[in-house]
Every structure is written in structure tokens, then in C-alpha cells.
Amino acid sequence: MRTSPTPPSAQAVAFRSWLQALVRNYDEQVSQLTSLRRSHKKRHRKRVVAAVRTAEGTLNSSGKDCLRGLLATGMVYYSGVAGNLPEGCTAEQVMLDLATLAMWPIVLAPKLPKRWFEDLQELSSPQVARIVSYARLSRTSGSQLSIALFMRSLSESSIAFGLRNLLADMSDPKRGGAFLTAVAIADGRAESAQGAKGLRLVKWVLGAAAAGVIGNRVDALAVDIWDKVTSDSPVDPGSHGAGDTGDHHGQPDHDPFGSGGHKNQNPGSGLVDVLHDLFT
Image 1 (spheres, helix red, strand yellow):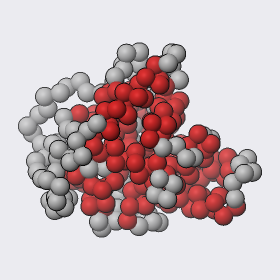
Image 2 (cartoon, one colour):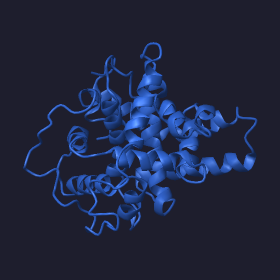
Image 3 (tube, helix red, strand yellow):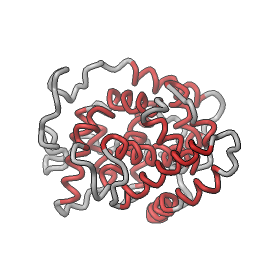
Image 4 (cartoon, one colour):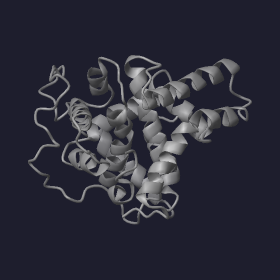
């Protein structure tokens, strides 16, 4: 179980405050990066501004870049703020935590580009995108979807393929890596994020969240996560074959948030217990 000195309601306020302060924090942090070119500083600032405005309901970027900004905020927040990893946590638990917090800002975004569903399939996987789509539909239909229910739905799906694609995109400085670096600068952790790829990126994501893990357990856990992500089948188990275009009108084959219930009632490493209303 994760432990936290603050209750869920305080965590929710903490995230909102963190998000709202990103642009101001970026300006403060980037002034200390003398090695970064002025043009790069301006581009990164635009990415941070776009990500924050998208989360607030204004689209300042288009296509995949809009999603990348939201994904970056979720990943950086998970890495730096979400709390210490519990003793004995497994790779599967951390993968589920990361997938949940990376995708949750997309679930909550008031507006998304027209082809967001197709783009998210490419950035993650058709299966993960369909779960996110139904989560958004559930919220807009008046249902009080919690992060706990969203995590539970992800726990019943194969997410390794989606995480592999997400990490690959976030490793590329010309794609998601640019947004990850920009948000990391605002969070005061720019140098470790720049150029982080593959296993190194996994270790960076664990970052401050692994502050409570003793000795070499962080490295061992990161290697285990990377092995599971890279050894997954190259064809997403949630797709209908390699040629699937995800033409489901933005919805999964079945509603994971319907009345059928869930077999797994205790997914993840305890993030649900601490952050169940983190973004609500």
C-alpha cells in the first residue's frame, strides 16, 4: 500500500495547485538553465502553456501534441508527487499506477481534438484508448466515475503494449519527449528527463516516487518493468488484428464501466486508497 501524510482531498487540491502553477514554475526553473538555448526555452514554455490550457478546456495544440501534453503532466506528477513506492511492490502494480495517472488527465479534459481517439490508439494501444473513451463517456453522461473504477478497468486489461508505445513516444525528443522535458523543467527535474530513453526513462519515471525504496531495488524494479513492457506481444491484445483501425466510434467493444461488475477488486499498489479523488 502507498502511504501519504495527506488525505485524498488534500492530494486533489495539491494536484490542481501543481498544475495551475506549472507555467510560473517553468519561468522560475528555466532561468537557471543557462545551457538551454533561448529558442528552446520558448518552445518548451509553449508546450507547458498548451498542456495546462488543454487541461482547463482550451485547445492550444492539435492532434497528438494535445494528448502528449496531458500525458506528460500525468507522468511527471506521478513521478514527482504521488508518494513513495511501498515495500514489496511489483512491476505490474507500478505499471498500473503509471498507466492510470498518465491517462487520467485525458479522461478529464473538457475538450479534445476531433481525432483524439485514433491518435491515442497510436500513442498507447487500441485497448487502452477504448477504455479511456468509455471513461470519458461515463463522465459526460453524468456518472461519477472515480479514478478507482478507471484503474480497476485498466487492471483487467493488458496494458504492457500501451505502455511500451507510450514510453517510446515519450523517449523521442521530437515527439512526446519534448513535452515530457518541458513539464519536467517546470517540476525542477529537467536534466534527468532530457534524453531519457528506454530503461533510463523507466528509472526516471520511478524517480522521486521511488525515494523510499532501499538499495538496488529501484534498478531491479525498473528492469522488471522494462522486461515486461518490451516482451509483450507486438499485436495489441485489445485490437482485432494488426490491421484494426479502431473504428469503434470512440468506444470499446463492451462498456467496462457498466453494471457487469469487476472481478479484480484490489488492483494496483494502493494508489486507489490514497488518490481515489485526485483529479475529481
